[in-house]
Image (cartoon, rainbow, N blue to C red; front, side, top):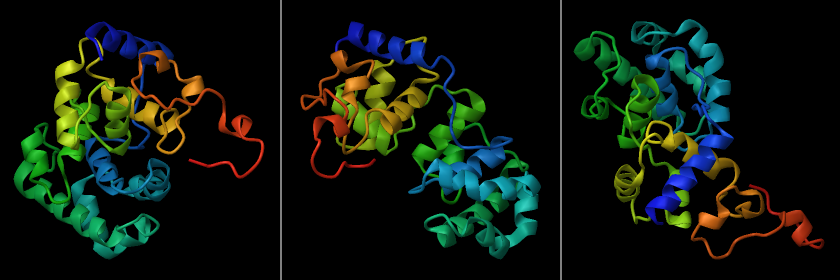
Length: 225
């Protein structure tokens, strides 16, 4: 994608949603970190349902340790991989108390040393909690980056590096939110809704859909995202 097209691409997404935000609910940086760890291979909607009651009483690492692993599991048992995630959240809470004065560090390397925290999680926390210009590449952004030609790459890290290089100001801070929301609601995995996409003319995807799926095929079942 040409530089001028990239600027136009982001400008259109920004015009449609000037102040994008994460859909994960949290009240502070610690709760955000926990929510992002829990969101691996789970939906934001599912995580929010599980954490609303949890976060009413657990706002600090100390409160999480007081709740304990069994108590945490009871709150998050509807989330995939909840056993492993509960162990990681308890362990990272203990590490925050021991190594960081109970505060979430504003440093990607330090975040990645916490149990259960990978590069994507660290990038989300850096961006949302601390305003860093990071690019958290999940499955949606990986797909959008490759499908559109904005940032093609064979791995999430490759896509991240290309986004970092290609994304200009003033779009860098919110870029990952625009891309994830675009992938989640428009540029969907099985049936991208190109017919209502505001950047379709800038996109390199060749097999574009031109009308809503239910209109395109009157016979047969309709795929659901």
